[in-house]
Image (cartoon, rainbow, N blue to C red; front, side, top):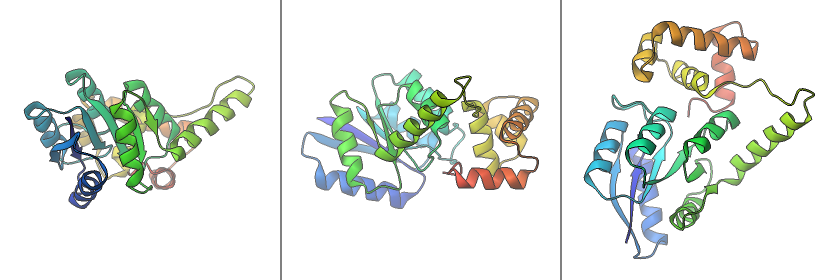
Length: 217
């Protein structure tokens, strides 16, 4: 039996995912646990068998970092777990970073949960799944890069994306530094570099830019 753990900081999302999976997957699949925060998720992974983890990208509850840091931790400490990340973050750089970390699936939370059932089936067979909307975003970025004279595109690094994401969620530089295990000076520099790359001079402009690209998700 293939065991599944579901994690999201919104209980209604967890219930919806569990209900959908229970209704559409056969008896060879079993939901063995669920979590509403990062700390609880890590504890569940230690306690219960898990072949497929379905987790939100942004879960601010808990001391354990969320986002890329969380996925990286799980990949290091629970190597056999296949990870499906649920997110509304339609940012090519972030999606690429997740793929490089070795996630098995990327699910767009804007889509119907029936698609998540398909993702679980695909991932459980050892294959990779990505929502069509995410695949399109990555394809469009690749075309832009290919058409540029120097073959490159000025985008934020994964670390810069994490700093911007946490900043627009209302966290201070000190809080972000603690959460990401970096110095406040480093966080300040990464935020400033991100704004320079984007041509943004004020925090309000950064907030607007992030909201338009789903970086609060």
